[in-house]
Amino acid sequence: MLRIFVFTAGTPDARQHLADSIQNCIEKETVFDSFAEPLHEELMRISEDGRGFYAWGAVPGPVNQRTWEAMDRGDYVLCVYDNTYRYVARVLAKYDNPQFAEAVWGYDDDGRTWKYMYFLTRPMEVDRYVSEFENHLHKSYRGFTRISDERLEAIAEEYESVEQFINLLLDYHDGDGIPEQFFIATAHSEEVAETSLEIDQIAHGEVDHLIPDIEGRKIIRQHVTYERSARNRALAIEKHGTSCKVCGFNFDKVYGSEYADSYIEIHHLKPLAKYEGEVDPATDLVPLCANCHRMAHRRRTAVTSIEELRAIIENANG
Image (cartoon, rainbow, N blue to C red):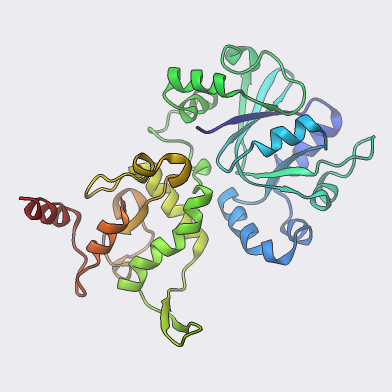
């Protein structure tokens, strides 16, 4: 279950920090200068998902550290001041990085910096009194707060999901999903996104080059825009779910959500070379299990359609 975290911005310094890293995106140079070079590729993906760099942090302390450690990618974060929810965003990544915190926010009066930092999607403004939701969240806040699992379970029971509750807080009613700027791939999904998309692109895309491995065998690598592909994958999952559209297999149900972590492969319904313009995840992409995905590309000359794959399975099983 997705979690909800709340941070306060009640002091003048905190309001300035809102301007520095919530209301406005952080300069890319500031971010990249604060992280080691091996992390720069990951930072680029964060920037793409977040539509820029947005962040918040917490000063050292046992409570803050435990709360920060409980955060996962995809969790929701609310900003509160003057007894009003002001911003909503989702967690993209977290780092213990005092160098970044110093560069963006400086130090407090006790010489501490907000080193337990986390990157966020571009925050959405909201203007809802805390009292409106005190039965499910809290009546008031002091500092960095994690909403308990018991409260989250009650929210999910009443509103079907944490996402639906957040939509209510945002007064968002545009369709059945969540706001577009909150679309992100899960951490595990990002790891498999490139491999999943490469299957389609190797079969039907334009191969840029061949790379020999250490034993001399050649493997095909498709050069793609990774961030854009990961976003399309996330959008497709939001639209279609994570069950295979051919056989209905669901990795979470079979292996458990803690291990499978919403794993599914995303299939292009027609060869990429035939697309003109943008890929529409609602109509051009579908989730398939690994077996059905391979069978969709079993033929060398054509992609086997979803309907035909279903018929093949039915005929094979009498």
